Length: 436
Image (cartoon, rainbow, N blue to C red; front, top):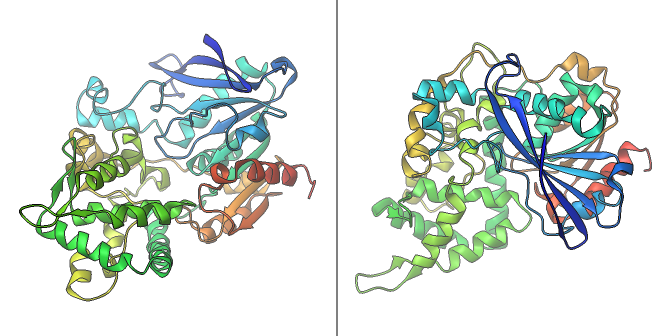
């Protein structure tokens, strides 16, 4: 472990940490990669007297959130914890994995083999590798948001001795569902979110249809070379899973067109905003590993599950929709083969993505028997009709983890720990402590 810098922000003292961990924990003497984490302690508190809380960000493929001072849930955590904000392997300031660095691994096949070590199982083994040096061997509390909750569930399955408590927000995965089953549950949920958006903003029905029709005839090139097709436009539906996302989508749609000498055209401002929302440049692992995080059957590839399941839901076919008079349905948290031709951040990784989609031999991620005998205090916020994680899957898993207490709420969307952070974390801590 290396300590780089210690510095201050309003109300908090931050320390940068770096760690060396094996790429493959089954081969501890083999290649190592670097992890980065930022420690946060409230100003005026002695860190040596505080227990540790490890934060696992959602994703896959996102570094830990960069707070300024004591924002969101961090305000509550810092009242009693020494917080570690971990950039999971391949993200943030940890050894990067993207179109620029992955060619160093060699061929697409070698890149795919490398990325097979970037799922929840490796992330949890990373956490266990760095924990003794930070805590002196004491267990810590883990807060897992979204995919971070998937990692936390794996933690409970494989290394519960490392945990004092587990807190999960919007991230209780199915213990058994295949990628196909995940998306079969997801598309009807996406449709419900669309209909709720259009009920709030009925004027957006015509606006979305007009934009999609324009893109069917004339796909647009976004700043940086991203190709915007009707299908890519539909993927803006990922906004509908956040607390203010429906409002963001509405504001985006209302300013889409400007008059030009050649007739109405999509405005530069609209295209720039869309580029920022759709680009995978900052988080390519999200696209590369999004389906592998669900892969648990060693004999079954994920094989572009979201794309195949979409074909069974014709309401999401933009051209068919435009031939009638129904509303355009936006999609949500799905990744498709065309992402790897439309996005310049992903295009060089197309063959790698194909190999990951065809890959077999994935190991199971969860141990139902061990979870049924769990002794770690666990609490989970389950957001009613969460766009990203199926509520029925989450509640089924909750029933299979001994002692887990749930808080099911429709007050928040998937980003509840950000939007209502102090209250969400406070409620979860009360649940694991039997204070409610």
